[in-house]
Image (cartoon, rainbow, N blue to C red; front, side):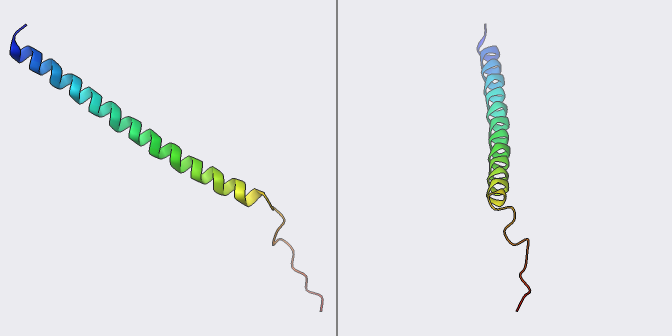
Length: 58
């Protein structure tokens, strides 16, 4: 194998790794956002009737 072919193969591997890392970061960001939304949903469901009724008697 000549040096040019080795360099080309190494560059292709490097680009593939960079793409894989970028995709992984996107997935992690998406999972983090989903987790934060789930936490908010669970916090709201702890007291589902809180604030649902107003006492208007004087």
